Length: 390
Image (cartoon, rainbow, N blue to C red; front, side, top):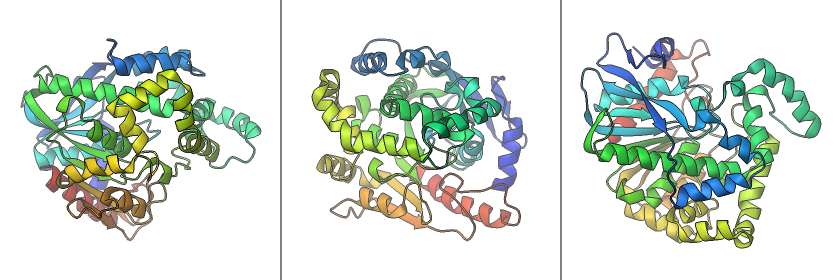
């Protein structure tokens, strides 16, 4: 089947209430694994807990049980108990359903023979309360937000929860990423130690990262926790710029008020906050992940450190950007990844397709008459991804 058919078909059979989803006519199956966010005290979880305690709405965040214990899907070779090859797939901001990623993971699993792990970011997808998906209730609250922020644009029920949460406490952006990074480190350790039910011991995981997942992936590659990513490849799709060049204003992501608050905090206030706050100062000056995150905020913030890392792993990174991407512009991906020294081994392709696409919907499935073009575009991009990650 082509992408557009697979998209509809996989969405129809995806059922997390079962341990395994068989995919008829395929040698791939979907397994659902459970995960509990680590509660043991280490420097990262300690800072997470301390900062959430001081956060507006932080106590509420701590009480969201869905964020601490959840499932994640793994696309595996059917009938094979354990694989020794893995791809970790990281998604975009404000995702609430897995639909878009099912056909992506399925294609990579089929073409590479690797098991593809779809791992949810903190407070996203199935790591958030059901009420965050209640369109009827959220629609009622849109007018309330617009009455508070009358100049806000792109406010709608789909981005209301994230917009409200980030406007209230922009710190949540970093804290969500930190918790996810901790969780991924724990997951990779389970896999590496042979304690994961679907992977052999010493399995190496490559990374496929889309949109904001690319920022998290770059931070992780710079931190390289416990050497777990030393041999990993990174494929970036619609991702790869620093934060200051991202524009999240979209009915699918966040409204203009939340976007402005987020950029104001991280680009203008964040470094001063680190100097004033002892907890932040210690963490962001002394931890590798803290420094890596700071270097991904602005192009000229700790630029030498960021570029030094990517110069060392340049042959392990490949990015594909889309020419008409308004959220993470192609030229900014190119500028960041190739760096001031014009890294000639790190590959960045800028592609364009002859149909209406968006960053949020690179492969639209609801526009009639363009199915052939969309299928061709998908095969081009994911064919390159599979070849690189195989």
